[in-house]
Amino acid sequence: MQQLVDADPVDEAATAPGRTLSGVQKKWLVYRGEQGFQPATRLEEPATHIAKFNRVDEPTLVQNEDLSLRLAREILGPDEITRAATGVVQGSEGIALIVERFDRIGDERLRLEDFAQILERPRGREFDGKYHSSYEEAASVVTRFSSRALIDVARFYRLVVFNLVIGNADAHLKNFSLLEQERGLRLSPAYDLLNTLVYPQYDRQTALAIDGEKRQFDQIDRAIVMALGLSIGLPARAVETALDTLRKRFSGPAALDFPPTLGPDDFRARYRDVVLANAGRILG
Ligand SMILES: Nc1ncnc2c1ncn2[C@@H]1O[C@H](COP(=O)(O)OP(=O)(O)OP(=O)(O)O)[C@@H](O)[C@H]1O
Ligand SMILES: [Mg+2]
Image (cartoon, rainbow, N blue to C red; front, top):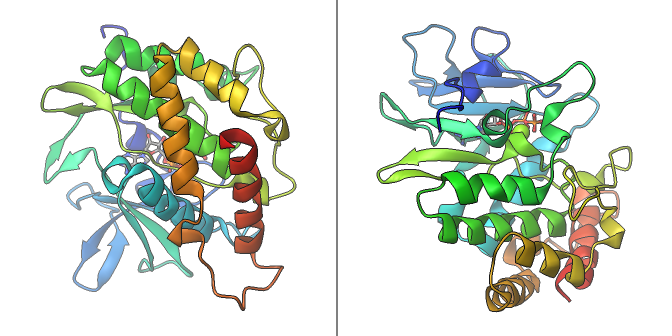
């Protein structure tokens, strides 16, 4: 683990006001104050949560991520997913996704390393390093550094397949991390889950390569994900069982049980269509 950089990915991504997170989507570090959530602008204020806001040009990101996290809790189990809820933050308009940081226990800060740091793929001048990899290479991080590698490679595999089924074309290296636990580094709870395919302007291909190339989502089928499972070292029976379990759980999840009044323009209608089509093809 010597080559790992000792940086805090959350603070590293910080922008204004005070301590926030970068990217195009506004992100603030916040904490629960006496009058609800407020930004942690001073160092003595505890940055216990990350608040993610909608973009003006994309007003459903927060709802999309909230829905994806709820769906993930149902499909992968609640302990596998970061805790989060929608809410408001003082000093900012509109709804936010307020994510509880899993790298803090009270004042104690746990070591958290995302896979781009571990693989030393920084943002380069030529390309964005977090997209310059494959799910096989990402799995090798788990194999090499997790203190429970067999369990965590299987967890990583289920998470990758979940991302493929929900149509997340942005599951890049920074969206997977190892987190310090009592007995060493483990694959962290899942975070930043989103159905990006509901936005027509977004990429239709996977963020990372599978078997040598980035895949168009509509070309991904059970054979491709089977082969991925085998190539990252899972036994054939474990892969079959994982895919069969996912197929069962994706048939009629409560999180996608929307009211019949849902209009066709509602992003949730498109969300469900994407998931049903992908689940049929990938898990079918
Ligand atoms: N629950 C959490 N606890 C601690 N750290 C977290 C948590 N969720 C996310 N992070 C860290 O914060 C970073 C940014 O969060 P997140 O990925 O949700 O934001 P994002 O802006 O949507 O990312 P992207 O760059 O993929 O668009 C992550 O890469 C991860 O290092
Ligand atoms: Mg992210």
